[in-house]
Length: 348
Image (tube, rainbow, N blue to C red; front, side, top):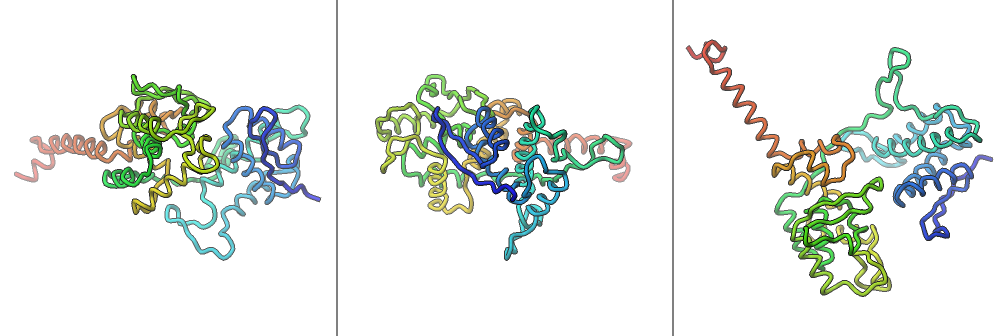
């Protein structure tokens, strides 16, 4: 009988989150992920593997590349009874980004199993891409993901969001993303010692991939934090900055679900079609680039490991693009207007 994955969440003896799917090899890999990644990374990997093995009903050591292609086909198929088509690529089913992430989780599992000496597996069944015409060369990517630009908030929308926030805590969290470009997880991970108001900087101890950085944030953020600490934050036995203000969990660290609920409520009250934590971060980084901040500085502020991740803000910064175009086109026009040019000959 094929293995039936079942996702079980728990807390280990050290108080750290742990998950299992009921298979020794897969659970060993999840323990490996837990030791080197964030809890959200662990949960995403576990869910991705659960989905994969619910479609590919085989033991991990029996999976072949044909099974991976069958999984891709199943993921791209529209859900039964659904006629929804995405505007960005005109496709039904799951987005290419979601499928690509799931394949990355699956590939990580098999890469781990290959490294072990006690598993009979000699190659990763998840191909890195389609083969090229010449043997040994890489051709097209396995999945082509459309590059779409994230939508940023306009000044009026920013004012609307800030105007409907109910507490100084909520305002401080939104300003951390809107003025500092912090990720949601980085906002929630802030501790009291991480604040450096005299320097107008915050220390990010739990950045993406476990990386740390020290970034400047506007004085408006620190003013909101000061009001929150003076008027709202209850006494707590921990040093997390942002905590629950009311209810049975009062004083406990605020969760990602709690922050999402706050942002969703602000979106409804402000009358916006969409508002997410990541959109607030994108808005900050786009405005910094539009104001002339060097791309390398934006990269450091954002905590991107690769400058390629930051280049998207070249496209989002409309004022910068227009300025560059007008400058270049003026030089071209000047060259064409010189004596002997085609334009000059046409005018004579």
